[in-house]
Image (cartoon, rainbow, N blue to C red; front, top):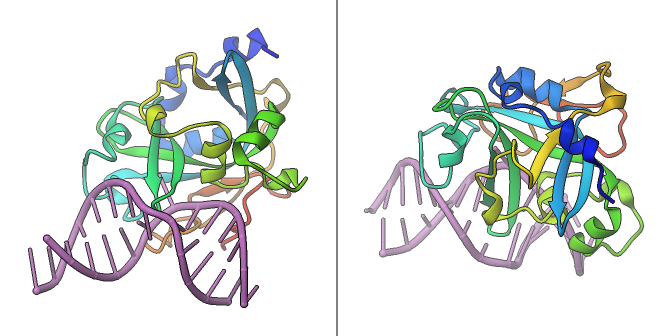
Length: 205
DNA sequence: TCCGAGATTCACT
DNA sequence: GTGAATCTCGGAG
């Protein structure tokens, strides 16, 4: 299964070069597409979080560049993949100008195509599909995103984000504090589609 | 050089 | 609800 329109509707570099919270909100409802063995597997983005660089104590970029967070400081439109808790990968979309260190964490997707491949990658036993992609590390596991995908250009042909023709009119968007962070709790930089069953279980204020 | 915390998930009590 | 998986970085010693 391979649709040319998904490639044609790929978001341009300019989309990512804007303000991080604007990009975060506008990513909701769009498609995250992954090409694997010449197949397109994808999900609709239903939950994201903004991380605002050197002024955000919860961000990896807070203390400046390191080898790990290098990609966060690139120009918008690249994928920043980091390894955490000794076993999980998480995917971020780099936003804004080069050197800013801003990114949007992709927290949850609604599966749309390639469900069989994703289930296999996740080694899921039960039938509960709402939990297939309801967390940042689950997405990386299902879409086979790891160290090798850190720094991938989202304007290329491996991983990209596409316009969703059915979601051109913005839906209602909810916001909250971020999940799993102890610093920067005052910022409500998590955005999600309220009522969507594929949003992750973390439901802060 | 060592130690604790971390943008998490899952199995088990 | 609790703990284990065990990488990376920053801060203490």
